[in-house]
Length: 100
Image 1 (cartoon, rainbow, N blue to C red):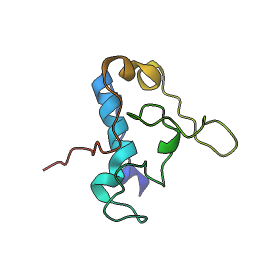
Image 2: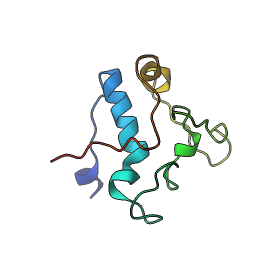
Image 3: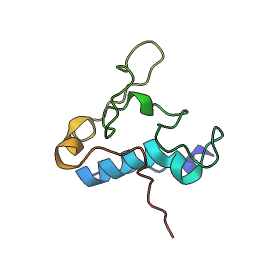
């Protein structure tokens, strides 16, 4: 069952990394959540680790990730800082593109 829902591919460019971050962190704006079916604009998804993300435009992370039970993402230079050098920070209202 997971195999049909899992999509794995190498992100080759910094633009692809940034677009993937927008998709993962702001997907609730496109689909809504159980918390708010319309999606909450202005706050990270309450069911994600977005509150720890340090790439939001105008919003610092709530606290450093890495404590007991918190999420730490490791993904190399592109994910940690590479995309930030070439692209602007991600806005809390930057919804993923709708595919037709």
